[in-house]
Image 1: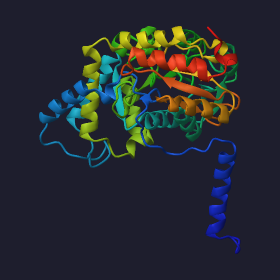
Image 2 (image 1 turned 45 degrees about the horizontal axis):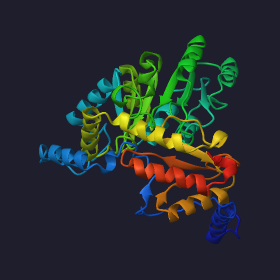
Image 3 (image 1 turned 90 degrees about the vertical axis):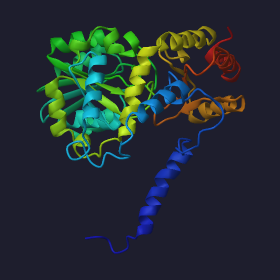
Length: 388
């Protein structure tokens, strides 16, 4: 029975207490509006989201479809499917050298649908401890056994493989969003094949940046045929919205039937899919990769952070500044100098590994990157960055 003295105020108090705990720890999240600072925080690595040329190409393409609908009007299994979407999936699959692709409304939806439906009871999911929350949440919704292995630690992974039952799924990100480092994909595939495990790779922060024309790290390593499924997202380097799962035709059919985040979601709009189509075309028009890696190398050549700068050849560069308040103070000082750099605080990362997450972009000039790097050397303690 419901206690007679319980009121809605008690629910409010419970919420308030949890929020207060976050505030006391210096980790209370709040929404903010985009500012006029120089962007070193977004995931718009190639500058596609703000590209005037890409926008013009989109507008020209839109004129070719004067009778488009604003909304899809239903899930893909009801009224929300069309020839354009299926043709786009075929184009995406061909670009990534995959047999098939299935579009989801977001990377979160894609990982949630894949991990919650594919592993079954008595199967085993083994995920790197730093995988995205969408992978963790999807695994929790499955009936499979779940293990986490130490980040990029092959010995730890093999110890979990030895304890696994049923069909085994190893889940990693090719480029990790909070560190910018990469998974040892070749070694993981070798180990997976010894234990008859399937490898699932989230390529969210690799698409557009690595591989031939930005096909991703799996393609760069020549592992297309050794990875069971890849999640590619459109909301980062491609500058649009949504995601797709790449794999075999039978995997696509399985997800259409069993991935609840696909089955029960209204499909994205035509304009969203058109923007993604145009962005993929734009990706092949220029050598965007050389430009972004030039900026990454410039930043790393100036900043000397020793062990505090996480090893990364991606646009995500991390400087560890332990303590929520210390990381926030450093970000605030950078904002006063005109740079939008965000602190990453616990509990998003482990206590003691709080950091500045610096994202480099093609829309950042070389001068802006040099100014940021030099500013970091003066703002962050010399004990962190050194004096070179």
